[in-house]
Image (cartoon, rainbow, N blue to C red; front, top):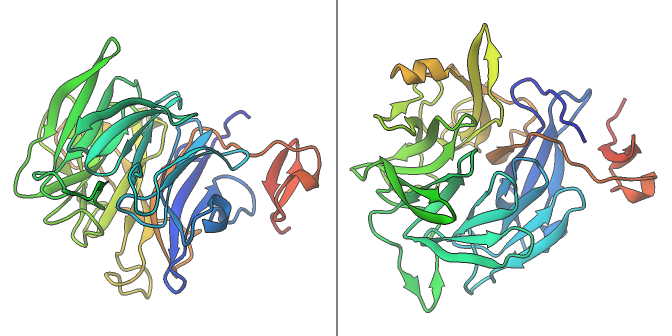
Length: 361
């Protein structure tokens, strides 16, 4: 299916939603530009075989595959799933055993996947789950693959999380630096340190779609649900981090890029999202559930060492009663092929050979 233009980026956005009352997490899909569109539940506990929720997730850039963690965050059993059919390509880990992960990143072509339990990063085949290199790097978490496939950025805790009885994993990192691996031929080796260790914690790195920089979170303490988290940017060529001060005022986590570089008045413009507990309307903020917010990013201002962000806005299709995190973007909206309505899920129609949401007229 050819990609359709969606305004800021192409394709659809998938986010993790956790209902405050039921505490049951799910991934929710919203396809931009579709008339009358509403947010649709894409995967929930029943669909993936989890006992309570499906949470931490990442999509391949082409929208073909999704990796999802299940139930517990440190680390969880996980599955890599075909997006069109929602069938598992492979699964790994167990509730109280090894092999699980809570951080993922697909290679640009979607054929390989990085997994991390916050203790090590491993490289696997994304179709079979077969180990390619384990560990690829020690004391590493939250990996992200560059758009050209030649660099991996990750967070490294000041102190490596311990393992207990063969169970290794942590829900976050402490006092972390941001470091890289670079590819030379077929061999990965240590690359430049983007943000050295210091008094603060640097984590959740994500490469920009042009590969020129990395956005990340910074907080005083542990990364897990940090109330003081702010969004920063650092150039991959080296330089001082810059806070996205206009957009990020505090309590802002999981920054993720829309996948395209766009043009505005003859200049490049990027878009990104993050989750935030800031006040919205009559909400007080702070203790309220997090929502997904979006901002534009000016690469020219970033290159000049200036705040590259704009004031952020809340994406309007969210339920205010749910806590939303980890917005993921794709270049192509992948849906299940069909011949008739019976090939689709109950809330879908078969239209033009694919299963589309049954949007009320």
